[in-house]
Length: 278
Picture 1 (cartoon, rainbow, N blue to C red):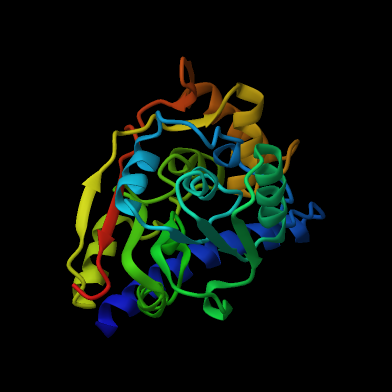
Picture 2 (picture 1 turned 90 degrees about the vertical axis):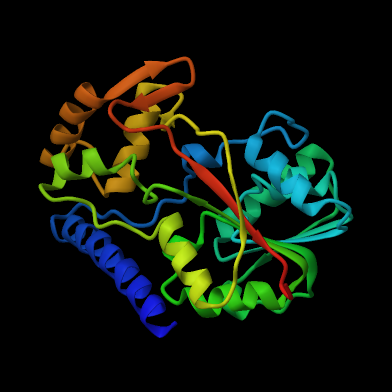
């Protein structure tokens, strides 16, 4: 168990150090690249009553007749708001104050009143148990995954659900990162590593593969470039930006889904679920 957790931690820390070094270099060059208060394309508003989202439909089925949902790292409410139309209560725990503010704004706009938003790190959260505990696209950034997952399980009365990607998260950024910074982007843990972790914890989950999604970077070229600058710690007008623009000319493609990346396979999400006592 310890070796799996330690290997995961090492992988996350290598990625974090690489990104921190890029941000530090920007600051030393006089181009401060602090944390953006903006939101990525994946944080765009979505209809809470939508029925054409395969991942959401899967999570709704997992919830079943459950009445309470705890969404850890739920951000601006991609799943929390639609699940609130099916459950009696949804609690979102997220460390980003900006995300929590946006979640509250979107809930108010949609007339949804049964969502409680708590701005705190999951490890420090004091929240009640729920029928379904959900954590979507968060765990691959967590340096101590075993204790994080154990805490999710402790708060679940019926089911735990994790949504992660088969490919290493950030696969869309990889071809740009190497062209801009001259070296590959260190990988983060994906679904295979997650399964190793859970098995080492004596957790034997069900896995449902979700319909593959196109690797969309944004709705248009300008937005796609803005997103890539944010993800790759590139400031507009620099030499790195010139290399990014050249890579974008080569790799970005306009499709009916939005701006996608050539030679990047469709993204394959999976919903991993288990009962806390089974």
